[in-house]
Image (cartoon, rainbow, N blue to C red; front, side, top):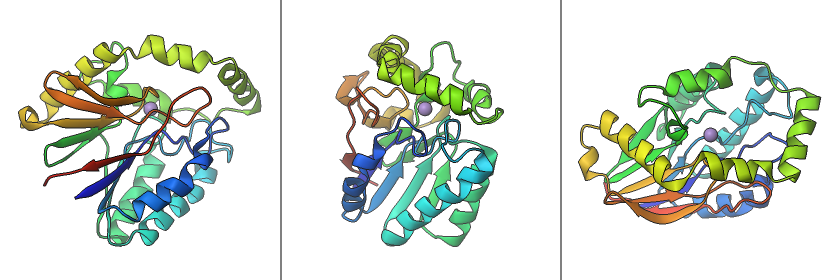
Length: 235
Ligand SMILES: [Mn+2]
């Protein structure tokens, strides 16, 4: 079973370069049996559309279009910290009702011996049960205004986000926290062979850790590496 996997597109944010990859993503999806979206596909915090209410129709249209164009594929959406707002997950519930084969998860997904999760649980200092607390700071806020957006654009131009990600998300501590999280939450974690995650914006190509292989496609941001991933999934 062929899966196409992507994360961290941060659609609607000013800084995303996802537009350069969308045609390729759509072309690859048409060859897949399964499409897995691993969080932060939409960025409601930094949305150029404004509030979540204003951004929601754009997100729903994008997803509905993806499902229609790939009507025979299973589509899984695992939310991340930038797309976990209750208004959005309600719309995911509605899509799941309308469209058999569309599923969404708040935390992690298991398909055969492969696990998928956004990866925000790897944030330094979070306990394995700390995901909801961490995400609360992303959902209970107003969208960033023009000035904050300009400041952020300036920081991105200065590559501050690249340095930040490198310091915050060093590979071994990140994988150790993901490992701990999966072990705490999946009773059959021992049989996980491959793990796909995002969030750190640091590309990881088949990195072996603790007997499993870890993959991260990075993020389409200035100065960062990004690729759409493919996997052969056993079920
Ligand atoms: Mn994230």
